[in-house]
Length: 356
Image 1 (cartoon, rainbow, N blue to C red):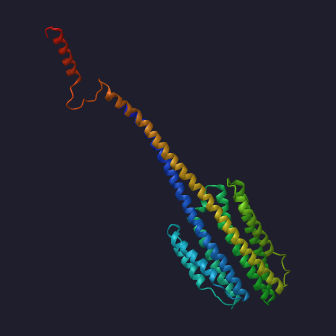
Image 2 (image 1 turned 45 degrees about the horizontal axis):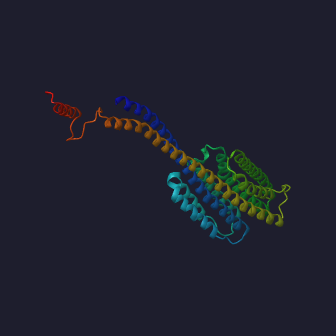
Image 3 (image 1 turned 90 degrees about the vertical axis):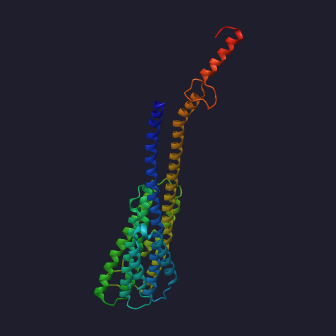
């Protein structure tokens, strides 16, 4: 019996150890992917705030009425995300700073340079918050190639592209309105620098998406992203026309054209952002489902192994107990096997008449 117990332990202990390793691995992977999903959700609301800020800034710098409805909705959504995920992503303080900065922004046309500077500072704070969410949600360390490239495009390159495009539009407007020739030349040089930065961001974003499409096992990723990506790339190209000769200010028609191109770039960026973040979330859901299947498979394998290890000795023990020579004690009140045998022998002797 002791040998059988040792054999059972020799079978169950290694299986239990392997089960523990698989369980811990799946739990770690589940926590990792869940945290990434929280980061994706939070980034989506922050990009909406970024786009709403860009629209408000364009309205301020072009003298149009500023509609606060879209920005208010975006801020409320980001506030809800921070309330839901801010503890685990450690973003409460950063978001409070961004919100305070947004609430202090000018809402009417005034000093264009001061307004542009205030919006630029707010955009920088928002980019820093997005990067903090990216880092603390571990999106930046995603182990799968397709998700990694896609998060780099959606959470780093696209938000930076939005800021660069916005600054390009507003610098073009300020340059067109500035009367001083020397400052005009400086502004045009800054425009050239911004165009180069924007082109670099857009190129890196497109490369990331193509890398994700090339390495993914998803059948829908390419079809869902390539069309929004083409629209965004075309909007960026339209935003970067041939440079104006040094010392020559853009015309009023040129200023209106660049504002319109900026609005299309913002719209295309919003569509592309939603598409990329949705694909990242879908990839993470597929990963979580696979981890759940792996965990359930481990539970089933462990249960089968335990049954296979325990059932044979139990069956053997029951069979031994049912044998007449088994080691199990007879029920109370029942005659023992030896006493019954003596009784049968005595009865036989009496019938034969032989002396006992």
